[in-house]
Length: 368
Image 1 (tube, rainbow, N blue to C red):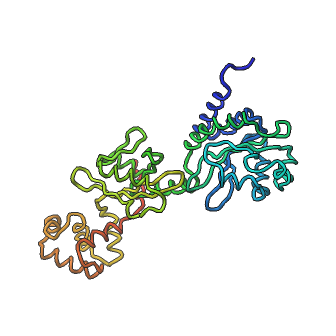
Image 2: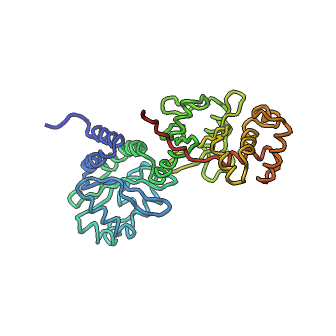
Image 3: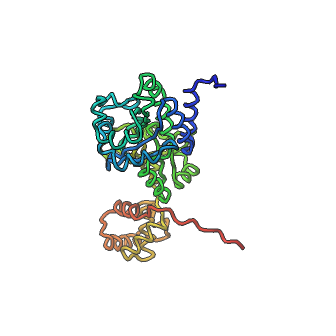
């Protein structure tokens, strides 16, 4: 007894399950291959920089065949290069879109790979393109099934949006994943967002900022900024095309009338961006210790340096440290000589630059 449920609806459900958990991709690809009358199916990714073609996921049965193709035959394939150059995203193709039957049968990839395995045609589609590369779905039909039919291509056309949505749910590409791992250790809050400001990752410092600061917040999965002008500037930055002036990616974020932090935007692959937030407050433990070690400052000179950077000006520094203004000026003269700075504003920049970019190790509480 056959199910009355639309088979394509069942496949869409299997694709959705694969988007939620990558371990479900073999089952989803098996179902797609079956409805396309194909022997097997796979998701391939070609890196734009290295031009390497990587097998992401495949049906269970013939994974070794795909590996054989990737190792020995992909460079000789007359279809692959034309797929990448000519086919738009979200449109099904088969071999007849690129080569005649005679040209395909005369090709090395057909004679050395397809024919020995009893394969007759390829049907597929480009799922997405990005700065990182191209993700492609391919399915191979055998001699029994013959060339891809119009009906099979129409069915694949209907499934390609589901495949694109499922792929988008997965973790960022491997280069992005490596950066995300590094972001965890940074002392600056870092959010990884898509072009709609949906947060796909945030580091521990970002979690701390969300808990302590009202300048940024989460509304569901979306990042919001209380500074409307900064939010508008961020949306413009995320929409910028590749090669835009990097200077424009620095955004001042305010809380009320006071400056809170500076946000820098770093474009990543797959349409993602990393947002680095730098609070406009100084870490005395980091900046002071490093400055003292680098420039040979005394303990008192270090405290004056940090106070000048934190509260600004000689009179506030004198009040904060309980010193006379003349004494503070004397220490400042020595600090200028040792650091090479000539203005108090330079000292602020110096301390900010010397703060460690990495999170301090978390201290274990002592058990008594």
